[in-house]
Length: 69
Image (cartoon, rainbow, N blue to C red; front, side, top):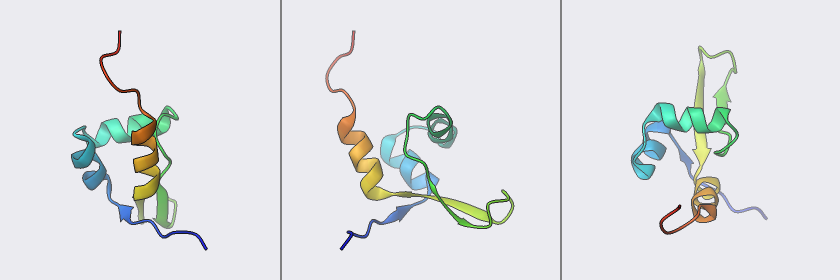
């Protein structure tokens, strides 16, 4: 049985990571951040994007630590 992950709004993700909402979308477009789950119609008008909390945690844990040169 798969574990259930909380769905996070872009504002929650951006606040958690201390980056702007546009940075989250930029990272997604560049393939650097997990793809969101699109709720509703995917026409940009009546849709909402949500990120699975466990995927964001996995992404965060995969990031390098310490000072990067």
